[in-house]
Structures are given as structure tokens and as C-alpha cells.
Length: 464
Image 1 (spheres, rainbow, N blue to C red):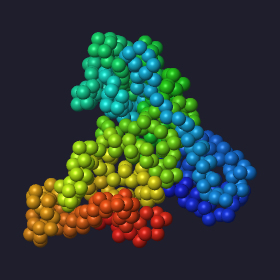
Image 2: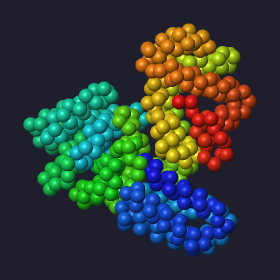
Image 3: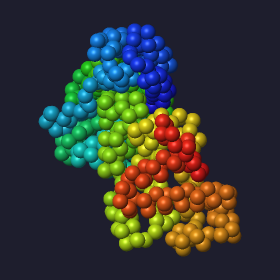
Image 4: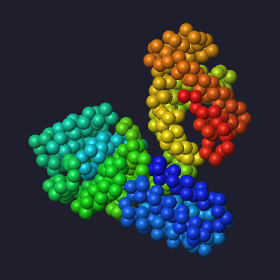
């Protein structure tokens, strides 16, 4: 998300860095570029105008005009205004009610609402230790009812069954009663969606809301619809007392216009963003961290949280102990590291959170850091014998042919993997020495295509 906006904003700010001082002329030029960037990101025109005006007023202030570092001064202003646009604080769910806390999910058909119900249930269960019950009042789509039942079963969530022959209010009330009997702390209710906003749908969900009085009413919207996302959110907000918004499919949205428009237009906070198809791909929306990513400053806090939650600590300790005993990093270790990376959303997801690396163009990430290539690498290693994984030096020409056939690849793919493994092996050796992290970052810098942006490193390119 925000790839195109991020690239243009960073380029604009970089151009200002060479200026001795901020002047009205170079501020106007910079803001023209920012305005184009916002509109290309499909930000609503009213939002873009407001943003530019606020930045302009502050940029023309005396403290900024006389700043010795014009680029940094403008970054601070743009950063503060982007955060204000998307909500200055992280919006938490409200559980300040006698259990069960009822969460009503609304949205158009195709927004990913049913999957988001399951994702939210999983997040509340795993991260907040809540007992969650889910149900579907979508009496128009039997497949949606079946989908939620299947997801609830796979995630260990309580489920209140429903059929297309019942009324939504009756289904919801029965689910709430079941939650009370089971002492569930949260009830999440999926509702019917439509391909477009219509009066009948609005009246139905309004009646449902009045009947169950939820503590949270969340609007689920597809971020890839851009300005339309903000407009549909406003239409729902005019009918229902929304308490927040969930943006879905942000992993497929390179523009980010919805995230920048929806809070401004509705006045309601974005509470979560869907970052992928898997049921763990739902993140709390932190405006300051998102802005940090847009401006190329990374998102180390989110990366640390992800490591804490998803990295296998026992496995990491095992690898650490192995190195302490002087044993070499082998292909089995390499395979386990690839699997850990996959758990954390893949290489592209990790890089998006590192400072400086977001400056790499989307084309480079897609071509050089394609997660499909990591799947291929796993297939190659899994086609090796245990001995070959432990002692890669024994992999000769005939073994490479056998491995290639077993993994559905070519011999040159095996050679590329072994070359990258050797680079990783050297990196891991550096980590066991004094100043290991600095050495590792220097090694990574050399592996990146063209080096890190602005680093001056020629780089050897990732050996894919």
C-alpha cells in the first residue's frame, strides 16, 4: 500500500534537501508534486485540497522558512498532517460493557466482510485472550453462512448456526443468548452485503442495529476502491452510528487513497487493516507507523511486534546454541529461516518495515524479491537428502540434476540457491562475532540490488 504515493513524496522531499533554505517558490513547487501524488493515489479531491492548504500554511511559517534543513522541516510538517488526516491516535475497540460485547460488521458485497469477521475473531482470541462467538445474518447468501461456519471451526471460535429461512434479528438475538450461556466475551455478527448501496439493505441493517445495540459497529471496505471506499463509508455512516472502519485488501492497493480519505470524510477512525488472504493477516491500524512507512522511515515497532508474535523462539534459540558451539549454518537452517520469513508475510512485507528500504522501487521488489522464488527455494531444499542439507559441498553435478528433477526446477536454479546460501552462511558467521549486527547490515547492503538507496554501495544483487 502507498507505493506510488511513497515514491513521489520521497522524491519531492529529496529534491528539497539540496536547497539552502525553504522559499515560497520551492514550497509551491514541492506542494504541486505532493498534490499530484495525492490525486494519483486516488485521494478524494476535498481531502487533497485540505491537506495541501494545511501543509502550505505551516511551511510558510518563520521557523520553517529559516530552517537550515528544509527537507527535514517539510518531512515533519507532511508527517504531522498525514497523521492528522488518518487519525492522530490508534483507535482501540471498546469492551467497556457487560459481556458479551457485541460487534456488528457492515459493508458492501465483495469487501471481504465474512473473512474479516473470522480474522477479527482470531485476533481477539489470540492477542486479547477473548472467548469469541461469531454468527452470520446474511440470509441471502448460503455460501457466506457456510464460509463463516468453516472458518470458525478451523480457528476454534464458537459459532451460532443460522439458515436462509430465518430473520436477521432473530439470528442475532439467538447468538447473543448462546454467548451468554457459554460465557463468551465477544459476539461478532456478520451481515448481508449488496453490490451497491440500496434503501432496503440500509433499513434491514438499521433495524438489526436497533434490536441488538452493539458496542462497536464496524464498516468493512475494500481499500482498492479508492474514493468510492470513502463515499460508501459516508453513506453507511449517515445511516448507522459507525464506531470505526476496517480497510481490507491493502496488500493489493498500491495507491492508498482510501486510507487517506476515509477518516477525513466520515470522521470515524480506521481501526484495522487487512494485509492478506490468511486469517492472521489483520493488523491494528497505527497512523503514525503507516506515515513512517510512506515517508521511507520504516516501521520498526510493527516489525518487532511481528517477530515477537510469529517467530519460533525455541527454533531461534536452537540455532543460536548451534552457532555458539561452532557448528556451521546449513541448508536445513536456511530452510527454517525461509519458513519463519513466510510466517511474517514474506520478504516484501519485511522490507516494507525497514528504514530506507521502502525507497526501493516496487519493480525491484517484484522482480528480485518475489516470494514465489522463496517457494521455489524451499522446494529445492526439500528435494535434497539430509546429508546434502548438512553438507552442501557434496552436491555435485549429478546430484544437482536429481534435485532439479525432484523440485521441478533447472540446474541453474540450484546453482543460484547455493550461491545465496553461501552469502547467508557468511552473514551468519559475522553475527557470531563482535559487532555482528553491523556486519550483518553491511553484508545485506551488499546483497541488495544496487545497494541500499543512498548508500553508495555498488551491490552484488540478490542471487535469484
